[in-house]
Amino acid sequence: MYMATMTLSVPDDLYKVIKHHNEVKWSVIARNAMWEYASKVQILDSILEKSELTEMDADEISKLIKKSIRERHENKPGEMA
Image (tube, rainbow, N blue to C red; front, side, top):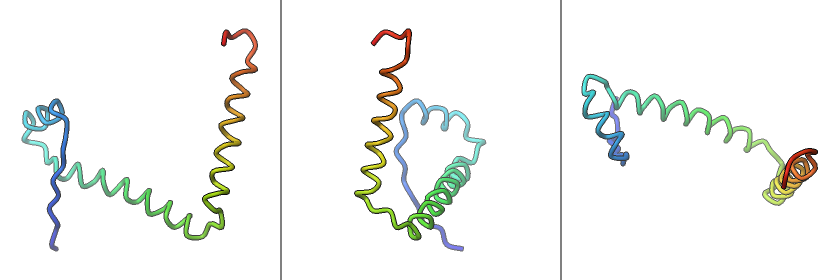
């Protein structure tokens, strides 16, 4: 099986840990983490393919949720604004 090569940028402090622990197969860990995330994205893709929700609908739902959260926090008794 052929595998593509990928280059990743990581913060310096993470790089130091990776270099210090060269006994760990970091490429396997990264590959597994990416597969886990990719499978979640694929599930979302399959849900969205069947959805009739438009982007405008999603924006309206988002506004309603944010309004509800804001109102809930504004109306909490005993809290200072």
